[in-house]
Amino acid sequence: MRILFLGQAGLYFEKASFGVLIDPYLSDSIGKRNSAMVRRVAVDPSFFDLKPQVMIFTHDHLDHFDPETAEHFLNRAEAMTVMGPRSVWSRARNFGGAHNYVQFDSGTLWTEGPFRFRAVKACHSDPDAIGVILEDGEKKYYVTGDTLYNEGIFPALPQGLEAVFLPINGAGNNMNAADAAAFARRTGAKYAVPLHVGLYDDLAAESFPFARKIIPEIYKEIVLP
Image (tube, rainbow, N blue to C red; front, side, top):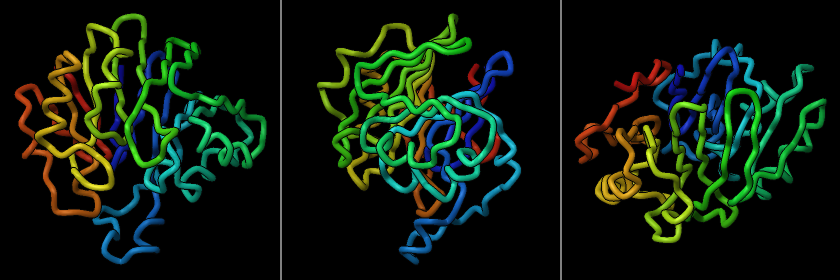
């Protein structure tokens, strides 16, 4: 499994040449609206060359479903499966094309290529927000999306998670570092990858108090031991 970090909460999973792109934010859409949130790392346009077979948006916030980024992928002729909860699905499908737009609400399962996907609850200001479980036949990975620590999330999580990818910025209805560490421990995941820091704030992932943390570097591969 190859996992790339695209910044903020963007991730790219690839196995056997089958790619899954989650929440890419490859623009400065937020900075154009709020000068205090201008991105501090320039967009690497080479990532527009990714050709995922599946694209997932966890919720309808600009740093997760960014139309300026999405158009680079959704305006292509190559068909993809495009998944998101109702809030995103209702907007993303307006791009049209040959894509298969799947309403991926909490509790929904979808199997494609080497992956099985499951949408799970998230607790965020978008009430439709989800997290995603990815299973590749060998390991299970959990991308929480934006969320607070909420007891209602855990019953739907599987045992034996290899890694959890989660926000630690403590703003915008996201967990802070302390709560995110408790959340990661509660999931039972072997490793935790802190996200949602450093792109347009002064926070550092090193502050995340989890013993088996893997600190990602933007535009680089995330290597799990």
